[in-house]
Image (cartoon, rainbow, N blue to C red; front, side, top):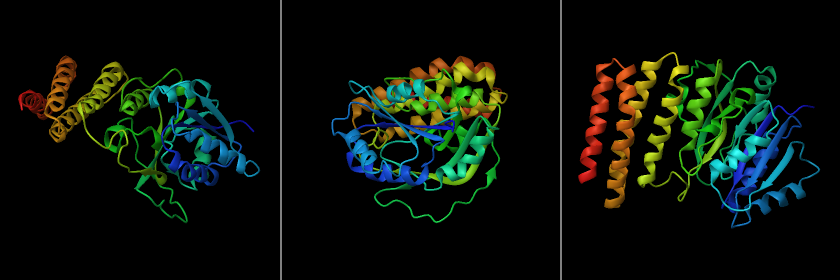
Length: 312
């Protein structure tokens, strides 16, 4: 049977979480219409070996297709995902991080929508956990209002969405940066003609110390940088251009204010300088497309926060 879903999973420094991931895949996507692509991103802890051991031990039970790609050295999550995107064969593309897990109802819930292929992007919910995976006996499926603006309201995670491959063909993650999901989602939604949002919780997100987003440094400005860069290059494909501008400004202010939580003074100053420069580059596009006084006021306040932050 043709592969309908390619689920991409970079693997790096998470050996202790691999059993939970692999068991969830065995329960949640054990179907020959699914392929799971594991990318060994130069694992120093031999995390990929744990994946391989699980596959060997459960080879009689595993029905999903497996593709393991081994990178010669660590290049980061974005690069790992990009390698997998180039070889994915499914009609839809999905993502999962190797320290997270999926619901046992993942494929059961999504299969009908994937096989009908009526929507360019299919969204679903997630639940946070720390040590113990949530217990679930069933999943409610309710279709909710959806639009191309959904990422601005419900988050930019790629692992809460499936993307029709033909729509995101030649779309890759920006490498050597973090918060790359933002860039990918703004581009993907700008291309989408039909999106579907489901109430179903299908991914379990592990909150842990030491993860990419667990602490703030000056690199937090990458969130705003990826948002501004992606919006600037896709805005012509959005109908609600003024609302997109408003959302970018909202994020600009939120990101700027959170910069005060950066503990190191020099790094905090660097963050505010970076955000100040990003806002400056975005201002001409904002002035061109925005007529809202409140949006202009919020942007001025964001600029003021950055200016003050540089000197504190």
